[in-house]
Every structure is written in C-alpha cells, then in structure tokens.
Image: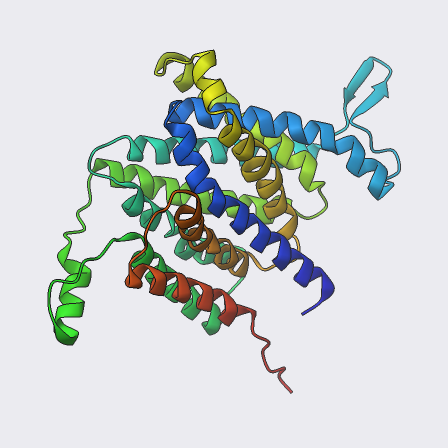
Length: 324
C-alpha cells in the first residue's frame, strides 16, 4: 500500500468513525429540533467552519496565488476554480436531496431507523455499478466484500429475534420479521441511489480540486435545499436550538465539516468501491457509539453483523499477489 493510499484509507476510516458517533448525536438533537432544522443548521455551520479553515490551509500548503478572496478589475471574487464550483454545487444538490429523502422516509410510521439504515446501506451495491460506467471494474474480492458488508448491515440493523431451534430455525428467524416495502422505504431507497451518485460525483471531481473548497460549497447548497422545509414545515425556536446546541455543533463541525471533507480528500487516493466499503464502517461505529453514549444494548447477532462489516473492509485491504 502506497503512502497516498494509506493516507486516503486513514481519512476514510476517520470519516466513518465521526459519522458513526453522529448517530447518537443526531438522536439527541432531534429530541429538541425537527429534522429539516437540524439538517439546514448543521450545513450552515459546516460551511462557515470551512470558510474559516480555507485561508489556514492555503497558508500551510503554500499554494501560490490561492486566496479566499481575489482582487479583480471589478472588485473582489471568491478564490474558487470553475471545477470546484461545479463539483461543489452538484455535491450539495445531491447531499441535500439525499438527506431530505431519508428524513421523509423516517417521518413515516412504517420505516424505523434500523430498516432505513439497512436500505441506505444498499448504496454499497449501487456505487460499483456506477463505477462500471467509467470502466472501473471491481475485482472479485471487492464484490465479495460488498456482499459481506450488505449482509453484515442487515444483521446489524434488522433487529432479528430467533423464533426456532437449529439451522432451520435460524434461517426462519432471519426472514420471519416480515420485511415489507412501503412508501417510506421507497423514499429511503431513492436516498440510497442519490447517496451513491454523491460518491460517484466526488470521484469525478476530486482530482485537481481543493477538497476543502468543494466541500464548503456543497454545504451551503445543501442548506439552501432544506431551508424551505425548515421555515414552512417546522416550528423553529431559539430555545430549542440552544437546548440542542452541543450535538448540533458536533454534527456541523465534525460530522459535516470535517468528515465530508475527509471523504472528498480520501477518495482522491482510494478506488471508489473500496472507499464505499470503508465508509460502511459508519454503521459499526454508530452501533458502538449508541452503546456508549445512549446505553443501547446490542444482541449477539448485531455484534456479529459489526464483525462481518469490519471483516469485509479488511478483506478488500489485503495485499494481492502481483501478476507475472
């Protein structure tokens, strides 16, 4: 593994870890504010957070001529390239749409968080198919890893209860819970497709762009998408925002500002399907974070699901024999 790939892998693991801890933080915030309010506010916080970081990174990287504001004959303009603006706008549209679709699904009675988490995880299957459009054909090992990760996500989120004995009872229990498909599930499935497109677009634009700048733009665009839902559907109060201030700040600065930027930078050095598998560790870290922060208990089968997802990520990272 090259140093760049190792760096990209480490960033993606850190991203998955931050996102995982974001699940219990999101639960704490949603106890005080609505879903659209949370999504809009955290994206605004993330956007301004990265605006503050851009001059610092420009100074550290010593990039000649790169400034947050550039002087022109007509005044000043933002120091973003056309590629960064285009990629940021597209990523923001997809990120805001995916988040909104997910919240619409979770707002229905027939789609609980565990079911939504499993359906959303199906983007791991969609990303390799989209990658084939760019003639990026995953290896057999990656396909096996994707299948294992989807299976592990099911064990982790389906909340299966054993109803019989022996091997037959085990298989009966896995599918006895009546996994129906309703309107809310359709919204979450559409969310999975949009998240897959989000990963795909990042793969298209991550080369020759400043990841911090592109990520900054995507947050402001995503906040504009969710702003109408916040103002029309939900009742926003200052007291509610103050009660949820700590989890909102975590979600805005770390889950959005740091993690999504880490995803954009990490995908520069890691093949897109492998990157998706690494990001699937989010569900594992989310389960562990819920157990630590919210005292949520996990069944042996859910812990087995964590192990399967982790094993799938390790599998695709193992070195391969070079062909003669």
